[in-house]
Image (cartoon, rainbow, N blue to C red):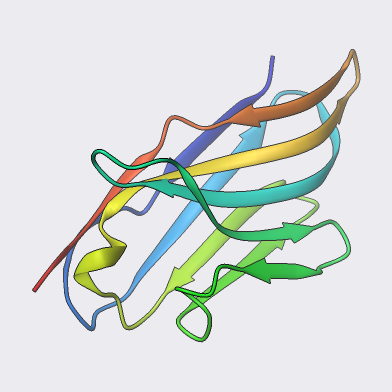
Length: 121
């Protein structure tokens, strides 16, 4: 069984910063891609940023230059540093792991439970 546990969400004023973390556990051998998604009320879940095991990164246009994704491969931990936050960044942020190899099975993907980020104007 794989678990992804997010932390670091909260309430912040516009222009402020937050750092999200996502810890993966469960006899994991490797994870190919880790990503952050977000979902605002009444909207679809959108990709925010992604990083593969080699460190190649992708960012949605709306967060380029403000957010930085990183990962600690040995610890299977994902981070999202969010700077210059805007009210439109308010959403539940979800961690996703793709192409997961464990000692007992392979998984296409797995989601965390989400963490709320609220940016006040």
